[in-house]
Length: 193
Image (tube, rainbow, N blue to C red; front, side, top):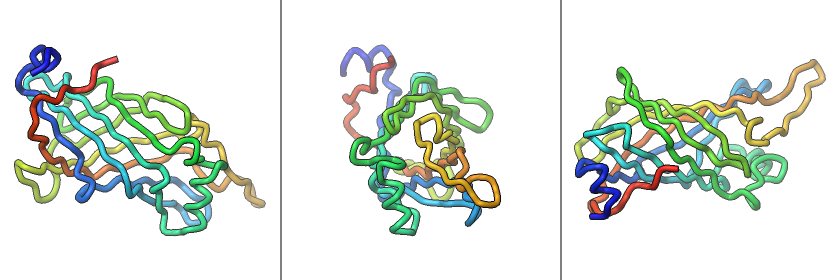
């Protein structure tokens, strides 16, 4: 066991996000169709849980931005293009936690989201109690966050003839998480910055 694990205690557990049973979705306001909803097909991450000292827990998530789908091929191509996500130059988004806090029935995770060449602080709220069918081998949780796309340089929009703009700025993100325990306890959690 490495020094980092010894310092943080034997209660440190490593869990992987199970992509087969998890879902990462988003929605944002659209003046014409009320909301655009979509999801990412390829994403994953690791959760380190410290049951003795929950504040020492941490999370890392990666997202393959080219895997976005909204159910409309033409719109998806536009979102992947240089006018929006520009997946050729910015193929991935990542989230790394900086602080984990438990309060009431929720877990709050503050961290840095790197997207489209920008890095910004965001807050993720996680339901502390597992949802749906669950076993000790694969607990399930729901996480929510709201991201201001303008803060990441995603400025594309279109004016309407009647006034206003097509897209809203606030993107609501939801992750339905199924976690799978990683047996090798010798993996160290990511170093804190």
